[in-house]
Image 1 (cartoon, rainbow over the protein chains, first blue to last red):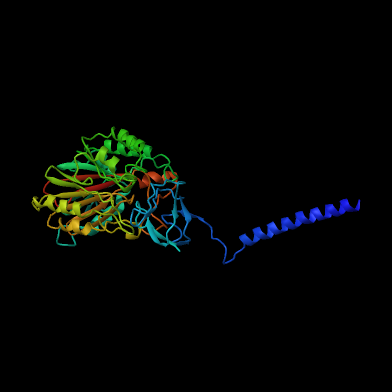
Image 2: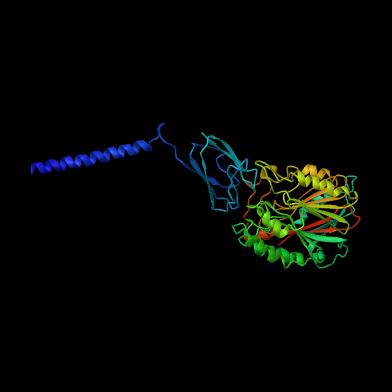
Length: 122
Length: 318
């Protein structure tokens, strides 16, 4: 009947419109946009006696996770040796630290101290 | 090629060119003995068959290093087996060593079971005493406390010590603790003060043997192969007529002579590492299985009282 058909069309329109709005909303939050929130979790791979990125720039509140892909153990230790300090990481083991305060955090491997890098929180 | 090298290019009694020639043969099992500045070389097989009798000095000891018990990656999946082969090699020497020095990295990860396996394996070493100094792999999570409890009894400070044997003075140093970001190995001011005091009472004619894990000379600083404050330590030893420095850490033999000081690094019993700058990093170097034992080894040291320098022989496990 005409009313039933109209109701059906109206209902479908509402559903489609809602879906469309939701989709656009999601896409907008994923798009590269200066107003967007940066990722709050970063991965660093340790390999070949190197921390990979020499200077890692992150926002306050970011959790950085280091994974040791090398075949010797390494540590992740802040230069002052107190701010953060991992245990010895064997191949495959991880260490995470959440950087809350802005600043520059130089760090090194306490087993192979020539391995150095830094995290810049801003 | 004659068996005797008699070029004496300097007036200090050390035959440098002959020594370097000799080192090139060392990997194939050649015994080079320095006696009063003249190098004599012998095939190691002849020595083992006791064809040469005058090798026996007043004192002989052996250095092994870098056993890395617990390592199980491609470069050597069974480091306990190669350690046992090294022990068999030591036990087969014609002159049993008075003692054995282990210059560190006993274990891979400072784990109790790794220290256990190491201790158990070394029980079959035919020698009266084993002296240890830690490597950076032995002091991983506890600033060396476990190593100290098990292998550092009777030592000073963070684990340094000295002893006398047959008129020679031996000094064990620890240069793997309190390392600073971007730095090399480190002895620290307490240990340096102790070294100065320890040798002050000795006559300059006393032969000195220093052993520590990380080289006490700048082998290759980019890879951490050196010690930041070793110069100061060596300055206290300048007056002595014969100083021998034995190190590990780099997993290959290397030699340097500077005045009265002979620096020597030993092979690992576990896995080889690349030559300085020949790879991206100083990590374990995988070689074809049949070549592995050519690059692992032990070091035999003979000391003849009254002679200028110790006789140092490297032999591979091949």
